[in-house]
Length: 514
Ligand code: FES
Image (cartoon, rainbow, N blue to C red; front, side):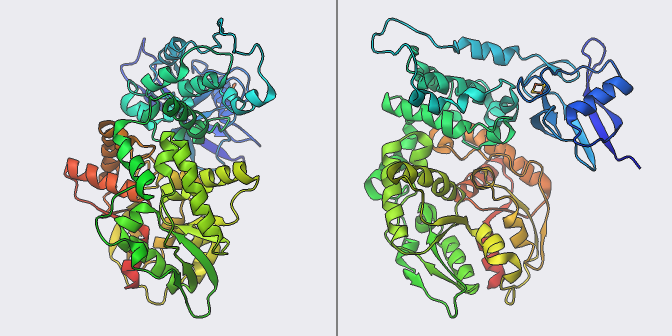
């Protein structure tokens, strides 16, 4: 029997229809069939009035980009699922001309306004040609196809396109800012076009057909230039940055820090492993109980834990806002401390710190000594589920916790570290806990990238959308694994009058272990 897939296609003809609808088509699946192949099949066999775009059919032109089951993707590069159904809709943020064809003028005119080509002028020190060293950092940015998928996926664009011109435009501006021949003030344009509005959630990277690291290679690069020219960081971000520079912690001391209440080495009988624990500022100064929950869970599972007292901020706020000198200073001192312990695994319980250790620490050390980190960084749940092994988890003392929970996937955990469902797998081992998935569980809550501190009203717009999704899930508890996301969601829930418990994975696990 030939396998078939149900394809739901968005239809709308503004000359005839008062609203859109989805038409269903059964498409026989062939080996390696793409979404574009399926659209061609529908056009040839069912309905030749269907409108859609395509050109190169090889992932090079970007013209075939549509929403495939809710996410932007190049139709010619998206494989049809082997079972179930797929929905195909036009890109978001753009008016529909007909069916899957959108009017891209709003994006194109924004791009044109930035004059996205090298502007030469009579500045003698500007080179005629670029060297290989000049070209290298631009290479990834030059891959942009202008498919506009990232604009459709970006949660900030969805909330306030007027405040942030979006990932496509930032990619072009960064490429031109890096081009030494160009005489235009690209950083100034990026600043007024909202470079500090990006939450660095990496949704754009996830949907980009060329996987361009737009937050890392464009946004944070432009922010670093903005800092050098005195435009950045934003006023609201200064308290965190000054605090790191003055005390080594991003927040002030308001109670006894975790690091002053736990020993530097926590021995266990017959250890199965040895790890170091990177607490991050919030678990040291604000969420000490969560830090203790992590240590106790590791200890309970026969893992010897080192908790160096002189560890300091991972500098995520500095990396994200472009204050690179401060950031790199923090990396070097932390790496020295953790490497001196002689352990080869470092466990982190905060999504933002974990991503910073994995990516920025690694890059900084590679630049400084031609070698990356001498230890491997694990997220707490990833360590328990994948490294220690979920089946080896000590479940002997787990008591039932009778509640339904939903999970908010922090951007810097899911897309920043590739840790997707480990927190859920872990909690599913707790008797009594029932998981319900919210819609868009990986949608950004708006806290990251310095947006919560620098642009609070914008940040809260994103957070309120997240809280609505949490509320609509019907769960009693929202579990997450990032202290910043927790604070943000709690704030927005309070603003909206939504009564929901927001809890860290480690705390829920600890509740069961009691
Ligand atoms: Fe060119 Fe798909 S048709 S990228």
